[in-house]
Length: 251
Ligand code: NDP
Image 1 (tube, rainbow, N blue to C red):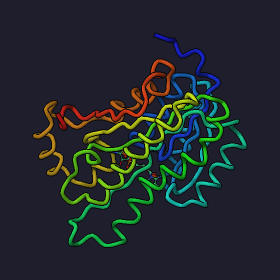
Image 2: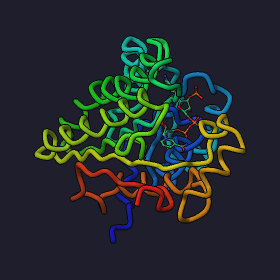
Image 3: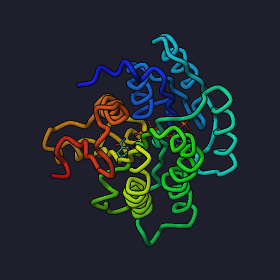
C-alpha cells in the first residue's frame, strides 16, 4: 500500500463542501496532505470554519462561492481557484439537491433546478477543470451519485434522472480519459444522516432504518475516507465504477 506522501503536490476542489458528505470528503483529502478548495453556495460561515480547519492540517485551502448549476458562476469559480492553485487534480462533484414530488405534480420548477445542480453542475465543473488534469496526465473525477440513480424511487423522478445521468457521464468520461491517466468513478450513498435527510423528518428516518440491513443511517465519515482512497494512487487502476455505500440497502 502506498503511503500517500506524494499527495502533497495535489490540488482538489470539492463542490458543496461546507457540510455533510462534501465536508467529510474535503477533510479526508486534506488529512492525506492534499490542498483543498472548498466550494459553497450559501453556507459561507461553515466554509470559512472548514477552511481554517483544513489549513490547520498544514495544507493550503481556499473558499469559493458558486452555484454549480450556473455556467457563468462555474467559469468565475474556475478563474478564482486557478489564481491560487496551479490546477485541480482531484474534482469531487458533490453538490446536490432534492426536490421530491410525484410525477403528476412535478412542475418544471421542481425538475430543472435538480437537473441543473446535480447533472449540469457535474458537467460544467468537470469541463472547467479537466484541461489541467489532461496536461498533467494525472487526474481524479469523483462524482457523488445516489442509489436512487441506479434503482429509482417513487417521488424522485427528477433526482433519479439526474443521478442516473451522472453514471452515464462518468462511464463515458472514464473511457475517454483513461489514456490520460485520469480516472472517473461514482460513489452511490444510500441514506446518510445529513441536512438533506434531516428535512424528511424523524418518522421517515425510522421507516428507512427498518429497511437498511445494518439498521442505521450512514454518516458523512462513511464516505469521506472512500473519496480519499479513490483520489490516492492506490486506486489508480479503478475507473468507470459505481460504488455503493448504503449499509446493505441496495443488496
Ligand atoms: P447536505 O445538505 O449536507 O449538503 C449539500 C451540499 O450541496 C451543501 O453544501 C450545499 O451548499 C451544496 N449545494 C447544493 N446546491 C448547490 C449548488 N447549486 N451549487 C453549489 N453547491 C450546492 O447534503 P449531503 O451531504 O447529504 O449531499 C451531498 C451529496 O450526496 C449530494 O449530491 C446528494 O445528492 C448526495 N447523496 C446524499 C444522500 C444522503 O442520504 N444524504 C444519499 C445519496 C446521495 P450550501 O450549503 O453552501 O448551499
